[in-house]
Length: 181
Image 1 (cartoon, rainbow, N blue to C red):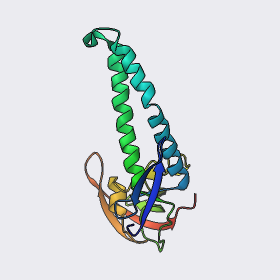
Image 2: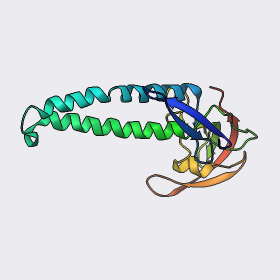
Image 3: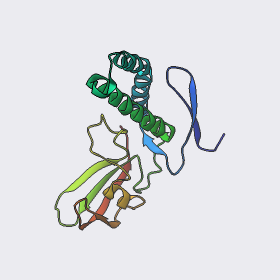
Image 4: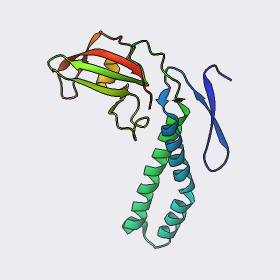
């Protein structure tokens, strides 16, 4: 097995997948991982229901004018897309592996930042939305403009990031500490 790899089991059967905890890993709490796994299991378990519904709608006649058939097919496409998304997310999950700390901005850290022209600071968790979906703290993705700019920053470092609507802003990392949620 690869170094830093974890075996993950999900689905209605006993599908086992190798999850690699490398540079492309997504940091998740155990709670977030379990919640996403339950959602995936529910979607997989729903496949036969969707298939039966498609079959029933197909028997109603001309598919070109069958809105119910089109709607259930769209639902199937949406659910299959979410299944693929969840499988990838769970495959790449780094579960509650505590960040190294040391005041460095990395996934799984709670960051406090100061913006260049603001008197206030902002505190947020640097992680995927899935990791902090049920938390009371704001969550910024490492792929977001701000999250990406701060990755690897040390306390006291100032970084420039591109704003979503154009322009740039300077932000200083005031504090970085491991998430304890």
